[in-house]
Length: 201
Ligand SMILES: [Zn+2]
Image 1 (cartoon, rainbow, N blue to C red):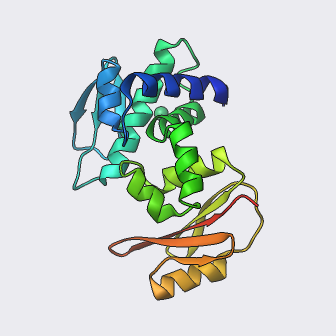
Image 2: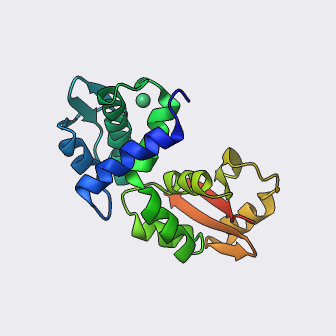
Image 3: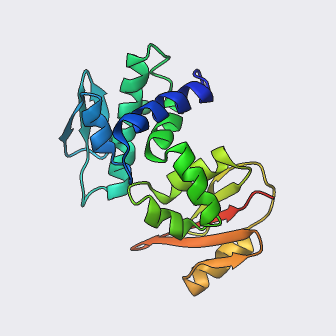
């Protein structure tokens, strides 16, 4: 990542200080930055000058749409700040920091005891994956994303094998909590995602 985490958190929190939104809306952030958002039929988003083109429901889930707009707004913010604005890891980090304000999210994470379902209710415009990524950035939690019974991505360094827990969630189709581990089904028609979170030890 070409920009420092502290710089990225700093510009995210100055946006939040000005906007003071709960829950965060990526379109309000874009508008605040003087960007114009226009829907298009493609499945990804793109920024050109001050215009963000983005997909819309039902083709794209609401949370993904917010995530894509926040990502492009993040590029614009870094550009305005004179930072390395094309850096993709920085844009991904800043999009998460914009959608999930650090102080508020840290407080919610502790109060909700790392419960993904509760955090999704508190932050309805953020995707489940964005929420767990933010958890692992702001605590020593680890998260695993399993799609259709296969590990797709891991965030954090824990070496637990959570495959059995994922199988149980796929069978009972309900969240399972076990000690410091929690696993949640995120199903969308035939697409069966399970997200496992291990709390900070
Ligand atoms: Zn990008």
